[in-house]
Image 1 (cartoon, rainbow, N blue to C red):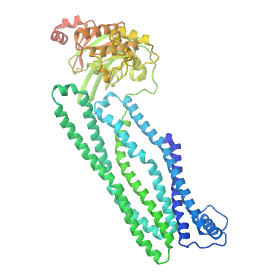
Image 2 (image 1 turned 120 degrees about the vertical axis):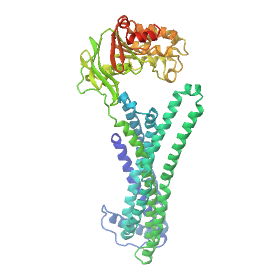
Image 3 (image 1 turned 45 degrees about the horizontal axis):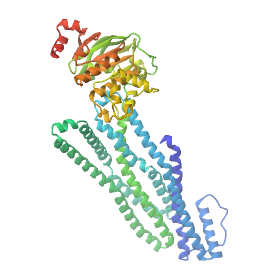
Image 4 (image 1 turned 30 degrees about the vertical axis):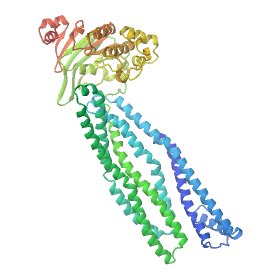
Length: 595
């Protein structure tokens, strides 16, 4: 709330005024009843000078009403009281609206800030964090949980400020009228609060379970949308429906339990409040019968007390909502408090280009204690050279390449660029040196132009078209509906695999990086698309330092050096001809592919 403290302050001020006008408007009934039932005692002597305390104010009001009745008659005094009551209720509702007016930007602003905070954190967290997380659950936390915080916590900020004030100020008025009876009321309200508090004790845990289950549901939807081709191809529609229906029904049961418990808050608090009110009626009537309290004063006392019931009901409902919202808040904080293991150093070194070489020095990497991916990797990639990484699936090729842009940090050893440990570089400076073309063409639901320009500024149409020409993409782009302004759908679904890959190559060409990482960029393409993409890649790699991961060995036969990995270790290295003559693992891979 800190950035919105002015809005919170103004909301609090107008809520205080709302409570004051509300209490005064009910209290105005006392002179009304006194005039109506002829209970107003004439006051002849004027009170002392007005002072800033309740007794002095009431004394002057009583004298004023007495003078009004004496000079103008009861009818005029009654009309004056009615007008005063209308004015007080108008001011009460005006200040209530103003309190809501100033709190609305606070609520929506906090919701926006939380959502932005989560999104920024998601971008900052290392890729290793997401290997343990469900994507659908993360989406649920960014959407449903933030919405839950808005509805359950932010939505009741104004209630949390206003209703306790209403209760406290009204209680002061009740104490002023009759302290003994108010003490009795407070004892009853205390036990009422214990009952309501006990009813909502487990709501927070139930809400956390429900929010987690919603994350599973969204994950199921995400997996289904991503795998529709396979689901339909294997006639697994009924299987997916059954899984979703089971999880959806379980989520419904959880939500029903939560709603029943939460919805019980208002009726329960109202019933208990009315029960206290009835006890008060009986107890107060005894005091009136004894002559210790005027009947008209008791009626006003009841009116003031009844004014507590509605705020107490709203407040108890708000407490239930907050408990429900706190579960969502905790799920959000699990992301916001997650450790950012990959971040900028405090005193980064400067770098703007690759001048000599990239060095992997005694590099080891493991996801956990049980799974070692790389061990004791020593590799030098000289400037301008193309180094290829080959090996069976799971050998560690992609992981080794992912260490260079610091998607992960090595658990041992170090990665150097021009002799500088990449941990000592700003992430933006490091990644400005790199261009990445991955096996899966990562595109966004935007225009072709924006997908090529992605992340770069001050780029002209000519530069984009030159990059597309070099990537063998310009011709097919012009044949699309709106050329470079054609929207390509979610993940580029309106384009073929080869077309998507050529756009990612155009993106890399436009960036003109010093270092290129190619992660099996042609492995998923047909022969014709592969030829076009391979031609574009050759242009991209020309006179450029490149780290190439390949399954199709035909694409890397002309690499300056080929590194053969097996179970995280370098087992062979050399040119294509040298490795072929060694009659080892590389030759077996070549023969398997029929080269």
